[in-house]
Image (cartoon, rainbow over all chains, first blue to last red):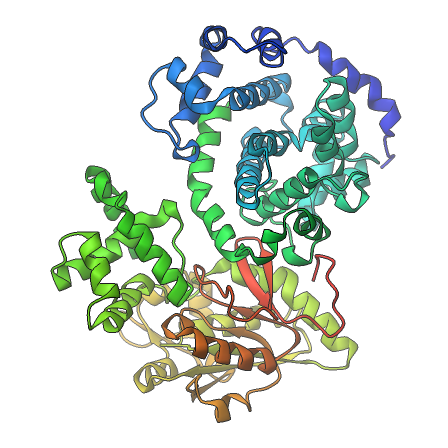
Length: 295
Length: 306
């Protein structure tokens, strides 16, 4: 197999910005959420109500015990229950979902979103547990860490099924299959799109280095946090949809050492209990993903 | 699965009386059980705990979870009551092939690792130990698993299983190896035909090939003199046994297990059981769907991948 070089597909990735399927509300809404002035919540509610799918997703999430709220019946109460940061994350998830044409999903869409949302939830949970100051950022980073997989699915649609096949047969992580058949990984291609879309620098770092924390230039905690959440998800049936033969001594992981450096309380964390909590939340994670992302 | 059926009916019951589940007494009971036994129920699985408590509550005529919590904490018979509750919680945990993720971790990660290390030293023999084997479901499962691998990765290897329990009645049943539908519900037709023979209309009996791999022995895990001699183990299974031990005896048993294991060996516990703060020389290793405890080889300095 001739390895395709990253530079050859760069223009294809950059062209993704022009994808037609990005919902009409995204640009005004993200502009509003990031404006330096105070956000007008009423306008956000109006915009969310305008897109039926996104409104439905917000309601479904607001009603999930995972987000600690029940019996939310209106878009208004959903927006208040979820908070603006989470609305933005939902929005991004929906947009990303729509940039992949239904017939191109080489990796099953539900599997992908189950993994992404699972990673988002675990990242947030871990962030709260260790005292990371911005759990919603951890959530967003978890949700987007595999952005490059979407990029590869679209930009390398001929070769991508082979990557998945190779990884599945060898029971190894997906990026190993990408290295073999593409010559680059979703970490690299995801970074290109993330830069193009002006994601914040620490989220870009997560996208680029979540499989190689030892190479992170800043040693920031966010990428270590998402790296571990990603592993935990793949170990708890929220992975790429096939069996990965791995045994992971989390406490011996380089990312763990980084995190313990930032948050000493982690050293005494009960990892088995934490894992069992994730196991317990799995059913609900799966239900939310199925409700939100099932085509 | 009977377990699942009862869980479902418990769930529908609690849905009609949802107040019940939100009773903070359940969280207190959950945390207490975790501290004492190491068995953990996540918040989403509290309905299971509630249904197990419900049976004990009606036995002791406790009207509310808070009242039952009193039975577990301040009443004179609290220790006996806790034991009865633990029995309820672990009920239905024994049948063959109870935990496929553990076996899959053995097949895809642990055995390849151990076989490689051992053959480098010229060894071709494996020792497994089912500590607290109860009525034998676990050792027979391991025996079938090893035999199935004997023509694949275990070709040229010999292996045996030590199965121990404190209870003479359980051991006698384990030795007889006679099982009905409940114990065999996850055992495929092919494996049944290959390794069992008919016993009566409803039950099957383990055949000689299985039995010849297993050595049954009465062992009290608290018996230091006996524990000291069970050396050279590659993998130890000890599921839902230590939950009845207090922290001091638990630590002692784990010290024994640690020295009974060869460097690079693994220990597995029940699926909701944790060793937290019992023995930190063991490394907690995550496998897909399972957690194992690892005795690192001499000189291991971390690096994530055992």
